[in-house]
Length: 203
Image (cartoon, rainbow, N blue to C red; front, side, top):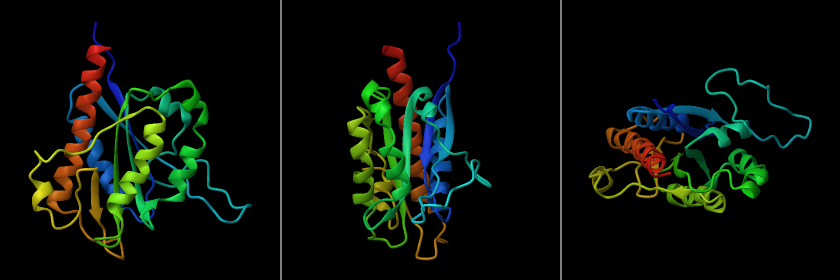
């Protein structure tokens, strides 16, 4: 009897589209692994005005994440643009609301990875990636990076780190994703999916 495909959640926040492009490349890497499907989800923006609300369904792009997505996934990739060297408040707000899953251990033992984009080349890519790892460790996820067997880590002059995929988007957010950034993002998605498949095989 064939097993159902594993669902790998690609959860991201993107203000101007750069982080979303990385998410799509990671999803491409996930779906290159037989038996794996990527599920793209985003989080709503956080407003400083108490009365402001986001529509229940985004106007375009990925749907908003639901807590059931965490229960149903076999692995998760988390992405956010940099905000002063940290993840964006919208992503932090989402994780702050996952205490029920933390208490029940829903995500414990699942593989995870992180990705980011920045307006400036030295704008905090690595610290943002590390900041996103913290709630994942608290949930018991097994966080994966990119090994130096990927030569792009040594040749890139834009984004790409051993801590996760990244993109230098420029101050206007319009810098094209480079070939090195593309290959590393796809490789990260593939590594995440391959790890989820291996974990299912030994479960």
